Image 1: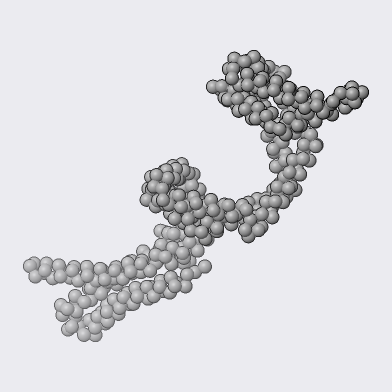
Image 2: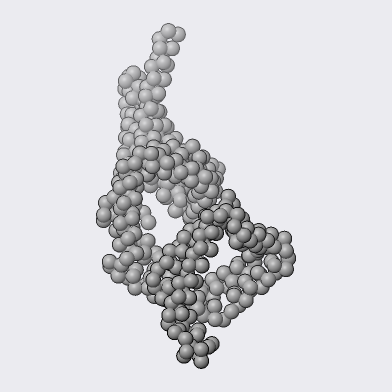
Amino acid sequence: MVDVTKAAQLKHAKRQALAWLIGAAIVFVGLTVLQTIAPDNAALWWVQLVKMTSEAALVGGLADWFAVSALFRPIPASHPIPHTNIVANNQSVIAQNLAVFVKDKFFHNDAIETLVSGSHPARAMGEWLQQPSNAARLAKYITDSLAGLLHVIDDAPVREALHKGVHKALGHIELGAIVAGGGKVMTRDGRHQRLLNKLLDKLSESLQQETTQQFIAEKLTEWLKTEHRRLEKILPSSWLSEQGAGIAVSALAHVLADVNQDPQHPIRVELNTQLTRFIDDLEHNADAQQKLNEFRDRLLNSETVGQYLNSIFAEMRQWLDSDIAAENGQIRTRLTKWLQASGTKLAQDKALQEAVDHHIGEAARYAAPEMADFLAGHIRKTIESWDAAQLSQQIELNIGKDLQKVRINGTLVGGLIGGLLFGIEQLIFAFA
């Protein structure tokens, strides 16, 4: 599509250049005719000066007209002489050179890093995000994108592909190495012992509660009624259950206290032994690894597990859909508040700004080569795909106006040089 304004400016510039050229031609032709019909005036110095000046101006203007026109069109159109229509004939070279220029001068690593460090993106991001309207707008964009992703995942072929992909990926995971690694992390520096201490404390507190003792007593009563029906009718079962519950709670509390206070308690030692043996089996025992992988495969291939997971996903998706669609949904509301708070923090914390700027700069520097290659390739392919005439037209529209000034300058400079040469000629004649 042609830019009407640029086309009008180019046309006006061409008219100006042509007017100077026609003016020089009129002066030259007029003086030549004058010398023919009035030979006495031909010897006048000023006539010779003006004629030579106009002649040189005409030559300079025509030469520059040819040079400028040869860039954009063949001259003549039917049987062009060599080295005309330069832009169209060198389309691939122009595309390649422009792509390399943009890549080397605008998208090299140092230029990108300088751009990032000078623009302070973290501060600008923080100032933008701390505005409630901006935070709400970004939150809406994120939730809308999430809704779109949910609809894509809900598509039957996509859902089937994801299901197969997850099933295949999980099917190749060696659970033995993962569980063994997790066990080592859990038992490192006695972490599992600290976890056991907390568990024992919670269990002891639970046993001391009246509701727990009442629950144990009720279970004992049920046991007596079920297993010893005749004896239960004779004995005071409620009293026995209450006493039994108290004795059981007291015994368990003492055992838990002993385990909790004694680092070398047999239960602790046995726990360490069993955990160590379990981790070792998972690392080195092929049978244990095989059993764990078989358990994994049974879970993956279980129809019941699959239906259960599908139902959970369906319920989660339904909730997400309804929440995202709501104007004041929980996700959008909380995301808006979090974005606004993050923006305020980022706008006020100089150290955080410097850290974020540093990481953005590193990311940009890392991505710069691939981005430069992509953009350079895009520029080259785009220019090469243009029609040659369209390429010439676009370049002429953008720089042709200034090139017409070259034609005017050529006419003026040519005339000045002609006048200067006439002066030199006259000096030579005067001293000869």
